[in-house]
Length: 535
Image (tube, one colour):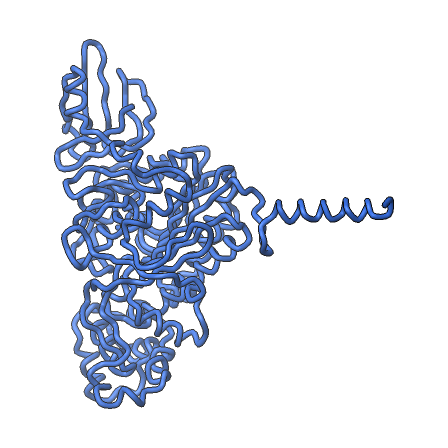
């Protein structure tokens, strides 16, 4: 009996250990911490995912975690824009085109990122577009018109997120006269700076907890005890295929994702991170298959970074999706009507692999006198042009017209079809990994609810977070007016007796008789109404 006791003790200890730890080979260091990494590949249809896999000649990280599909329609259309789609995935509410973080009737709705922040989680956004663009904006701001980059940028600064990485430095700077035509498929010309003249860069840099960086090298020098803001381009970051040669100081999406995860993982409670691969959509608007592949593969590398962390951590949910289709790209076109059964993969990817740059990158090399036209065409993989093809290129009007002709010829050579330069309304793929991940065919509005449940808070508890300031304070017996003396910086002013409260637009505070009082959310002025959070 004495010789059996040690054996019994060992067996008991082993059984206790087996009971204490889950099966598998990766264990979370802190089971109480929960993280969500939500990754959005903007404007991507299924055929370009297939084409990108063939171009890579191996599987994608996304292939490992395919779990279902997502329906994308907006609150008013079968085909959504990025603003309405982003808002649906951020708030759990369908809305109108161009609305950012707003309901159909123009009232701000708290986002899952904001709710996570209010619940104690670290938060961040990463984007290859300006961070003020529709998708990252939908998680961090509230405006009626997605083109209000100035208001969006100001709200993002005063939201005080833990990590912001991407483009959009221009909208942090004071007013300038520069305007450009969008390169993202939108037809509007926009102001490339802040119209209100405020210098948000100085606010970011004067905040002692923010580390502001503007180049790729800065990512490796960031510290977990600081908030991190990286503005790596005035507008959007370069396409990944173009970046190494044309913009080597800009980080890749994978590098930004890795840096954001490293920064946010220092949080004691956990984090919510939104990552957008923005420019599949931009290339799709141009009908540029090379640019589309560039950004699908760039996004897939970022997914790999997220999955590597999630596998090590054990308590991280990773969800990837596209917000809507774009361009109607098809493998096969009118030229393959009769011979599609005999088309090998190389007939599709071979012509694309000749390109060293995207169409935008190649066209950017064109000299003013167009003396290097042939070199530019070769940079996009267009060699051996016949006389008719070359004349079409040579006679193209501005650079934009040249790009149009270049992508048409590339699509013809690669046996690809495009149905539109706009968005499309098909269901899209859903990818998920980790505890609590969604699956099946779901509505896009279900995604933020899935994230909230996993992070153990309820979006419904924030439904009435914002109040109409004028109505609310009038009921409380205050006199109310909107001070518009500074047209670009209106204020809600409420007064009663000797007390005056001033709520400046887009800020996270109000002034009580001139003394600053912090708020938990930013003030929103929209459609002639001021919305505030008041407890």
